[in-house]
Length: 216
Image (cartoon, rainbow, N blue to C red):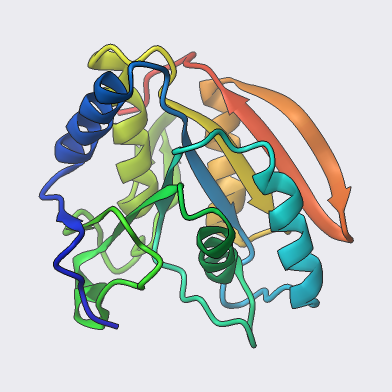
């Protein structure tokens, strides 16, 4: 993988937030910002055709021109995880804008071709919490790496006046420990569950979000 000259190099979460706010102003209507999470490289989906059918079914409910945050899971159809879900979604919905947020250490591997809008490599991680998650220290959350980045963006978009920040999250499969922790954080932010169950034999949880608490 390499990095295309046709996409934006963001230098901070604030840059991403400003891009989204300006894009929404240019559109003149609400811009849907979304995330997908779920099975990673240690929990591949058993049937890639079922995964593709599920993503295609769900794509019908994604507003045109939505922005998706992607956190660097490798896309491989022969070993399908949430990274491949992004690649497939991009192939059937080219109107969707995908922004990659990933740790600086992974910059040497480049940016996947389906990332069509921009990327941000950050240094806000340590070896113990390289990919994300949180710790509950004396009833206060200490949030790490990629998890911290999307939470920062979530609250920053609200601060900058966006009526709905990251408004929807789809979680496919059971995911690993970080996914489970992020579901807990989503619950603390405040979630409205639209659907929990199975589509095409794949566990799917869908969350609409509204702000409830601030997480430092």
